[in-house]
Image 1 (cartoon, rainbow, N blue to C red):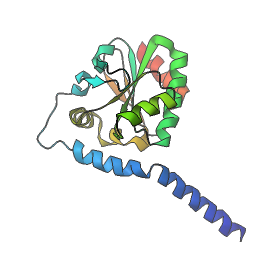
Image 2: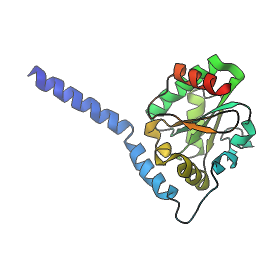
Image 3: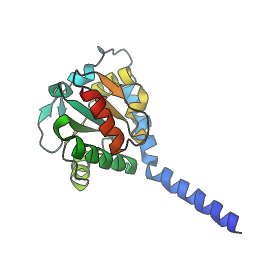
Image 4: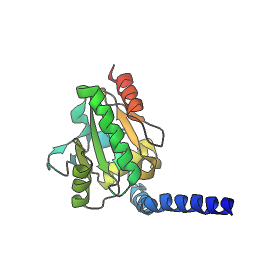
Length: 187
């Protein structure tokens, strides 16, 4: 009986975990459909020079504006609990590295401007949070692969001071790992 109860508990836990990010798979499938470049081809790294708009301040910026700094670029979805965990790790890393790096979180799930602003404020994201365009997504996927637009992978890309990009492995990157990456690429 204990084994059966344990098995049911494990199955329920897995179901809850999958349900928590269940919308993410749907969001990923929808995003993949819009990201598939039909007859569109971009120059390598074109996404770095595309205009983003900060959801809170409405200030426009490009990732190339931060050339000379390390950029921690997080692809996220406000409804994804794993993304919230990654955000905490990014905040921890930024507290250690100071002005050696900046972070930018981009919403790849597009739950609406209000949802992104609320997510940033609720989770104390003190850095820029922005939506990405279809063209940004297509260019990013062309360079980095389709997995970078799936929030459940907690995708993070490090841009080094020269603007070269380095895609991290799927899964949550701890603040210690992010500090290591910033230090590695800041030199």
